[in-house]
Amino acid sequence: MGEGDRWHEKEERGSSLGIRVTVWVYRALGRPLARLILIPIVSYFFVFGRTERRASRAYLERLYAFPGGAEALGHPPTWRDVYRHIYEFGAMVLDRIGFWLGGPDDFEIEVHGWDELDRVAGEGRGAIFLGAHLGNFDSMRLLAHHRSPIAVHVLMYVEHAERINNVLRQLPGGSPDGRPPPRVIAITPGSVQHALEVRSKIQRGEVVAILADRVHPNETDRVARVDFLGATACLPEGPFLLAGTLRCPVLMMTSLRRGPGRYEIFVERLGDSLPVPRARRREAVREHAQDFAHRLEARLLSAPHQWFNFFSFWEEDQD
Picture 1 (cartoon, rainbow, N blue to C red):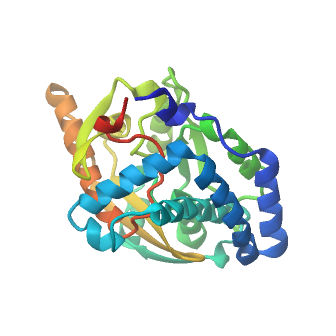
Picture 2: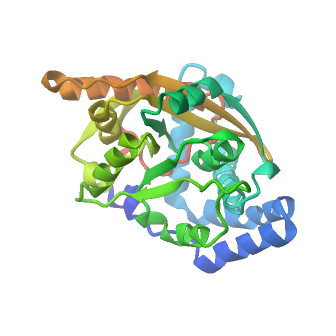
């Protein structure tokens, strides 16, 4: 992977002041007016983000060539699609601020798979939720507000986005009825501490959510090569190995933005566990990762501008 395309080594764009201004506008003037400031911000990223533009165009072209992709996009991808792709990311970040400000009633959600969530809560075994950088994974805060008796933890690599995370941590959190928001378990490269924390949470009957479509810096030698949108891509083995080791229910969750303040959330069970026999560990992990990739492809077709991996994702595109 080229030096400029390593997502975890990218310098975080923007500044704490810019993020704080956005938060102030949101709190003082509301989301509709805050959306207006997205236009100059997105335009800046579109003009100066050469790597992001290139990655966006490569993704959209692959999606267009994939079965069903032409119908999803409606036309061959143009620079207007690239701009819309970046705008959708900005809108997602703005909604993320809204989630953290503690106003979940400002958002309308439609959930497919409440029965799976209720089943996890009733079993009390703990569970792993696998997601992707598709739509807005932070919408789990909305689920927690509506009905979630289970403590939720998010396993994530935070060092590449310290500015926005620091600002968000200072915002009021939790839901109006006092339930705490999802907690972050930080991934530390070269350490297994986060894996031990995950095991502890699962054993207590809690939920750990993991984004499974991006290889972390301490996993570059442990990847599953899968077919994704017609070409070879690498997914991290870690989430699937964890699921197989902990032998707990594994669900996939995606949350797609359907308009201002509107989200459609899909929850589907991948298995009561994801078995990883020692004799064929890597093969079993790849099979689980490939299943995840196929399910992710299906969701991308219904929200083609909401997959936010702005770097060289496919092996043949990397230097």
